[in-house]
Structures are given as structure tokens and as C-alpha cells.
Image (tube, rainbow, N blue to C red; front, side, top):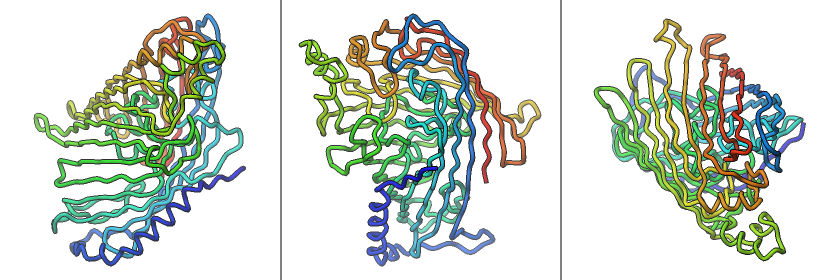
Length: 457
């Protein structure tokens, strides 16, 4: 088993030292816990293990390309094990979290061939032998906006304790962009809910991430009251597509702003979360690449590499809506758009995406702890991205060498049941995919069957 500890831990240590240096100013906030039966946690330990097994039979395809999903069918598995360690720092509002993670396995087709990929735990760098790495290492600091407090229960990367009702929360270090932005009650946890990338994420947001799905940066949340949160993040992009290095440069940042409004519609809880992003990074430009390739000296991929400059731009926006529809029934809607002029650098090749689905709790059919979900999604590309693939270009996920364009369309359904209390769960999953890689010549359909085993403490 090989071990990988990113250089980002050094930066996290420096950031932690900076917080220690300013601790007297933080202590001057003057907010404290009320007395009562609830005892805040100083240390918390959680862990999870998730095993995905997926497979599909052969499907119709006129040809295979470099990044094509193999048409002959296959079965793949992934395993992830994560420890979630949290500790309260010796001043008001300070917390530190550390998540070592083990990963082994491969996604279908080596995690290539489908922009809306069917396994949310699959990383773009698979491993036959397990790899231990640092998934998260960050400091979280809460500043009070008033004296009123509320109880926050303990959870993964969340210490139980009282927090100010109005607060500013600053997170610095290594974490996942989706830990804080575009989170959903019904389609956000791939280890308990939907598996497909274009369902549990706002897929046209090419969010900052290294090859294993994590980034480094700062996130700021302003929460004036329990119904409203304003969030901003400045997150480091990799130095190359799907890369592992995250250069600390002002022209290598994914900026995101999100407004989260919690509401009650006809007495039922829901949330509306519009967002916008603006990225500066070492991304290649599609139009320039095709102009260079047209001269006949370089193929599209080589031409794209010559157009990469730090400071090249990508921008977009979207919205997430969560809503309780009836007792034990929730519905969600995700829609996102990006300009699509520059290559996908960190997530997946989707420039327009919309997904909608329902989540049902087992109390509806007298099976507490059971859950069912069903959702549909459609993914599309910008004309610049489409022209590049049609000319023979490839990207981090898809690229068949040619393209007769068609929207990626998919359906996903899952059934989850508890095996042991609230600690072990099993789920069956089915996904139907039309035009994987946006290619009608390899249009399938592809029928993906899967099983998930998830244990948590």
C-alpha cells in the first residue's frame, strides 16, 4: 500500500499557526455556552466505509475512441474508508478537522466515457492497490454576530455544541468544494443517496478539485439568521487538467458565491440556493485550439495545450431547489450553465445540466430506515466544446475521436435499506444512460446495475 501526504498539509499547519497567533483577538468575541443538559464536544471521531460494485452489459457503439466507455461491458468496484477527526481549539469558536482517507478501485471504463458518471465515489485516478492520503485538514473559526446561541448536533466534521444564531464562519485549509456549496438534503450524499455526478452536483460548475476531488482555499459564510446564509469561496485549481498539484496563485482560483435561503412553503421546509462562479486558471481555449489545429501541424489536443495560460477564464451560474413535498417525500431541482469556452479542468465535461428527482422515506410503506430515490438528468455542451470533440479532441472524461452530437440523458433509481441499526446500509441502484459522451454513434442505451454497502460510526 502506498502512502500520499499532500504538500498542502504544510500550508494548513501555517494557517493553524496564524490562528494561534491571533487567538487573543478571537477570544475577545465574548460569546459562551449556556448551561444545561447538553454538553458540547471537545473531540469527535467518526468513520465511514463504502463499497461500490457496478457493471453493465454490452451496448450499441459504432466505434471506440481514446476516452470511450468500453462497449463490451464490464464490472468494477471501489472502496473508500475515511476517518473524521475533530477537535475544539483553545479559544472561542475555533475547531480543527483532519480526515485521512483510504481509496482502492476503479470506476467503469477507468472513470472515462460518461460526463454524468455513475459512481460518485470513483476518483479519476484509480488504484489497484489501496492508497492512503489526506482528504481534509482545515481550521474552522466562528465569529458571533450577537449573544443568542442555538444547539448544533454532532456529525461528520461537526462538533456538537452551541453556536451563535447569527455568525460568520471562516474555513481555511484542505476540503471539498461540495462540503459547503450546493449541498442538498435529497441529492448531495453519494454514499447514502444518488450516485450520478450530474444529480448530486450542479454539474456545469467545474469546481476546484485535485485528482482525488479535494481542494485548498478559504470559504466564508455569513449567517445573519437561521433562514439565510451568504457564502463565498476562493478555491485553488490544479496546474493541469485533472492534476494533483494546486499552485497558490491569484490567477489560479475558482471563485464562487452562493445565497442559501431556508423557507417554509405551505408549512413545509425547503431551500433555494442560487450561485455563480468565476474561475481563473491554466485552462486551454477551444476556439484558439481549433484555429491552430486547422493549420495542420498539431492535433486538437496538442493545439489545446499551447493555449493554456494562467488567468484564462470560465464563468457560470445555477440554482438548487430542495422542497419537502409531502410527509416523507422530498423533491429537488438542479440547473447549471457555464460559458463553455475553456476546457474542463477539475470536474467533468458538462456545460449545461438540469436534473430533477424525488426522495421517499420508508415510513410511507411502514419500513422505517428504508429510502427510495428516482431522478432524471440531461447534460449538454457549449458549441465551442462540441466543435472541439467533433474535430477529434478529448478531455478529462469524454472524447471518442469523432462526434455525432446528442444530449446525454439519464435516469437513476435506488433503494436503500438498513442492515444494522443506523450504522450499516445496503442499496441497489439502476441507471439508464443514452448517448454517453454526447455521441449518438455510441448511443447505447447503457444499463448500469450497482450495489452499495455503507457503514458508518
